[in-house]
Length: 94
Image (cartoon, rainbow, N blue to C red):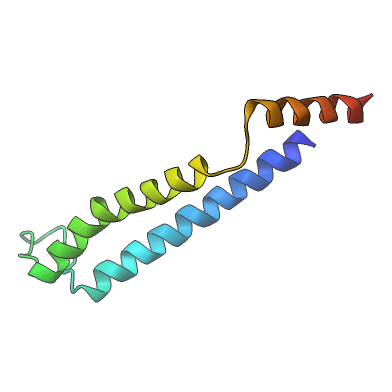
């Protein structure tokens, strides 16, 4: 049972990473990022692309982290609730 759960969690992580990479790529594309060519000098990027990069690596992840922390803070679990869940699991196994 744990293997199925672990496999499911890993698959969801892969979907999440793939979705995030897709969105980052599309955002950079929409912002006008000029791709680098290996045989040429690096291009000068437009301001819109630089702002998109700044938002993607700074404020956006911070905002997502804060939202996650708020959700975790208000998640209704206490020590007594945890002990109750562990007791129910032990009873179910027996």
